[in-house]
Image (cartoon, rainbow over all chains, first blue to last red; front, side, top):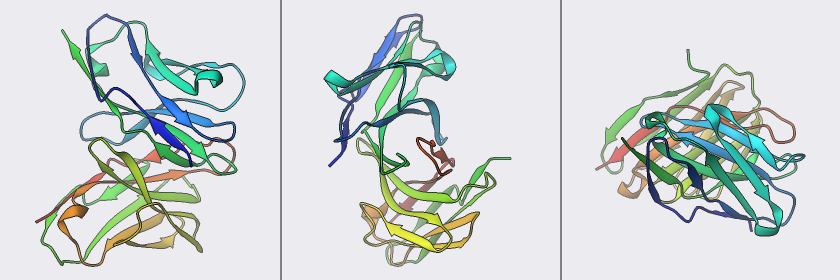
Length: 114
Length: 113
């Protein structure tokens, strides 16, 4: 069965510092992979997705993620964090023929220090 | 206007009550989903529907039912609410085709006393 692990429940970084959020997945086939962000009181917004091609994918708000098949990882990165990036981040793997069925990780809450 | 609208946004009710959460979308998507979110567990799928005549159970469907009234409307019901159904509930939609992402509503915060 597929699963997604986000090892860090909480992360605190200083504004302007770099950020990496970890995501490991377990899935028998080539995965569809997604990162979503949830701001307080709002739904989930898609940051980026991967399902083929270049293993480094660019997303919105200056985020990028790298797919590493050998490590079963899809870590999210940002070179310089802004205070508005404080939110909860979810990694998800898409299953099924078209990858539309999502299994989510438990989420990582990001706090940004001024 | 939001593409995926959930009503109500907040609801407090008592154990044993019947509750309906509604979701409507203007994205023209065939596929709709209901999730619940609990701290540390991420989102878990309750039910999903790939078109008006297709309803499927997700991983945690016990205690819930759904109705797909039209392509644009997908309702979730708790027939007899219990306290451990207190959670944040999300509706989502997606198009067909490989890797189509899901689009989420803003959620319904449900508290059962």
